[in-house]
Image (cartoon, rainbow, N blue to C red; front, side):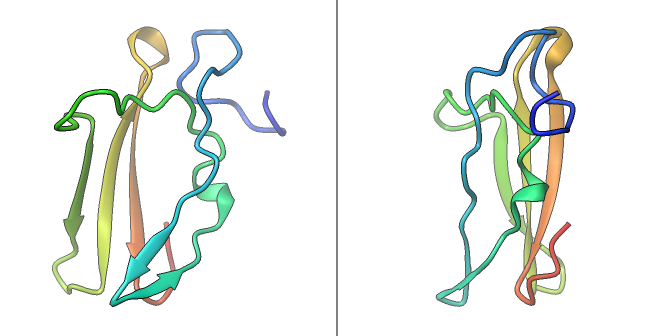
Length: 91
């Protein structure tokens, strides 16, 4: 457990890379993203360019974006989809 949560992206070992913050801007304004959306996601696989394990797409209503990310590899791998909305109602 890390901070009371099961860490994603580990194979029964301590995480090496942590997502420390996430900043989201929509129409030029920063929309806060609460840490509980990403504090259990460790060892993101962002080394490749272009990133095969990271993508951002606008929602159909153009009021937010979907952020797709894969983390770690092997038995500890995971995938996450964050929905970040202009109104701050993220999931």
